Image 1 (tube, rainbow, N blue to C red):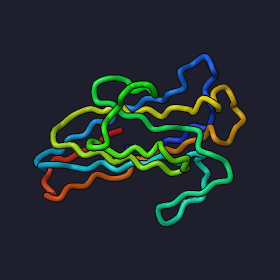
Image 2 (tube, helix red, strand yellow):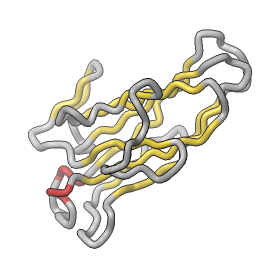
Image 3 (cartoon, helix red, strand yellow):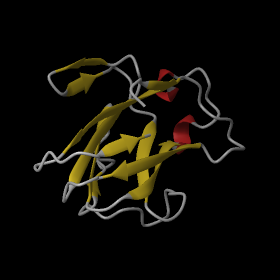
Length: 146
């Protein structure tokens, strides 16, 4: 997809609070491709030069798995497969995944527990930006769909 996805309502506390997305990556004839995407929460954060700032905290963590729906208590992908910076309380979270063969990953955007059921919090808004696909060999047939 080439357009941003925006959610602006926190889920009710009775739901698991994770929005799931299938990420299909095909390196085509390339030996390896790198998929870049990112999230911004709150979605109206001021962003410039690779940094985003807001006076409220991010309401989401980013989860990824390659064989199941990712959860906060699951192992998820190791850093060798991608970079998911939930360690910092930043409004901008980069998602970088390297793939050597065609595959499907599951991306989860998980609301932080303190915001579940709080529909009025600005931290509940999130923007997922598909980003770009890159390869050092520039072979044909590479694709990424979120």
